[in-house]
Length: 222
Ligand SMILES: Nc1ncnc2c1ncn2[C@@H]1O[C@H](COP(=O)(O)OP(=O)(O)O)[C@@H](O)[C@H]1O
Ligand SMILES: [Mg+2]
Image 1 (cartoon, rainbow, N blue to C red):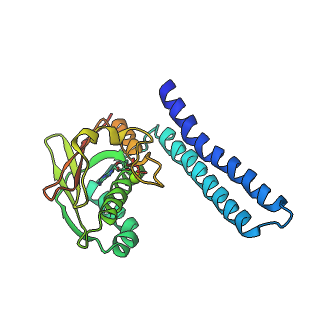
Image 2: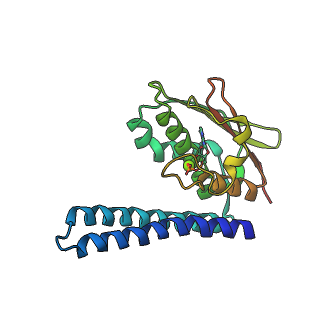
């Protein structure tokens, strides 16, 4: 917890220091004999971006902290997957992602629909971002679900650059990101959601060398 608090402090402190530095610079541009408004505006834009970043970190942490208690209901995982696809459809369309689904779960589970929604949206978003960044022209996202002996599995696979084997656990830690404007809390939230449901989440390589994220959830988590 101490380590976690330290990293939160660090994450929030960075944009704040940037804001302070930009404010000081903008003031200097304006206080010149001939004020340079252009430079001051550029500084203000950076300040706005820094504020948004700090606010996003606080919001994401709120989401991470708000996990408990679960609002349990009987649901079908395939319905939650379809809803997550509907929510992310605009991004999938914009990035020209080909979506292939194989949803085969008939069995109901007891789970928190909103949290599972958040989990799936995070995973789809990461897959799309990974494929967009890899410069491929044929992005393919595969979402499959299966029935297990005592639960269900969801498998999300992309053909992006994949995750190096030695990072496949690290990515679930808070604030781990390789994106210039990433927060690195998406997968930490996913892990928290899955833990709360007594399930498992882990990363593998997909057949195409991209990432495959597997999520297993028990039929009943209490
Ligand atoms: N589908 C994926 N393909 C490749 N790398 C991924 C994928 N999903 C996650 N990652 C890696 O895990 C990191 C952490 O993801 P996440 O916690 O969602 O934070 P963020 O998306 O803000 O970077 C990403 O920055 C990326 O390096
Ligand atoms: Mg993410």
